[in-house]
Length: 166
Ligand SMILES: [Zn+2]
Ligand SMILES: [Zn+2]
Image 1 (cartoon, rainbow, N blue to C red):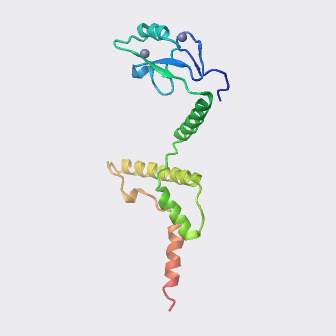
Image 2: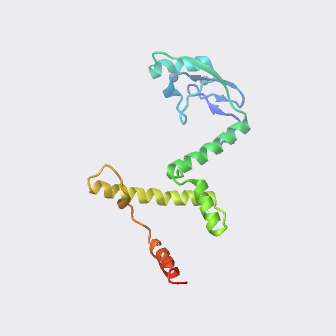
Image 3: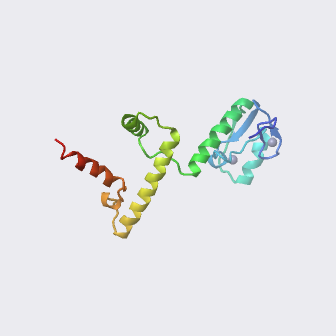
């Protein structure tokens, strides 16, 4: 975590830009990428990068640096965001349906991590199904490409056992 007493350093002169200080950003989108945004302590430092970056048309935009507290909160948010993106943990299941299924069938609650774990399974199952569809020369993944879970069998037995009862 950034525990220094300034926000960031100027891209051109490496002079620190303090928390809550005015700074400048470039209007060109490639200088404003989320993870590698160029920041300039004053308009001359912005001026200096224009020929270096070969901009045909560019302007400087004045911004104000976040306070130390805001910067910390932002860094935390970005850290959790990037860790979930790296592990490919987009939630692929309908959270409310899964939660109500678990609640209704067991009375139990569902943690957020459960949804990620289920999503990992869904991703793996989908990957295998894609492979099978490819092998079959299809452009469409079909139900038969999906391997059914083994728990399907015992469940059917439960139903059969109930039937003979009067
Ligand atoms: Zn500077
Ligand atoms: Zn630029």
